[in-house]
Amino acid sequence: MCIVARTLKLTNAAAKSPRLACWRKAAPRSQLDLKNSFVVGDRGGEVAMAHRARCKSALVRTGSGEGELAWQAAKWSHKPDFVASDLAEAVEWILGEAQR
Image (cartoon, rainbow, N blue to C red; front, side):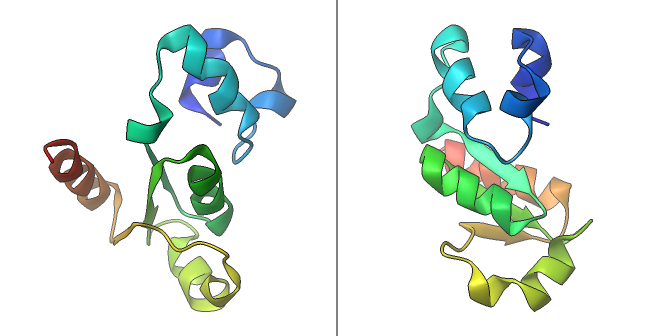
């Protein structure tokens, strides 16, 4: 679920990841700058949502990520900007990107 969904009291349908509606509703209310935002997930749908929102994406190999890479990545319309071994590595990448 999108982190901002609870704060903005969005319905489950609007908040369910990887739906872009959550981000579009949250952006004006919370001054969320989608072009300078990041999506971290373990599924190709989250990478695709990041692309639609014009965010950068990191796919983590934990959870479903390793299987997604092995079995689904060839079908993805967009590749992640970064593939991380875990959330900590994704955060390190984000912090490095934010300094650019």
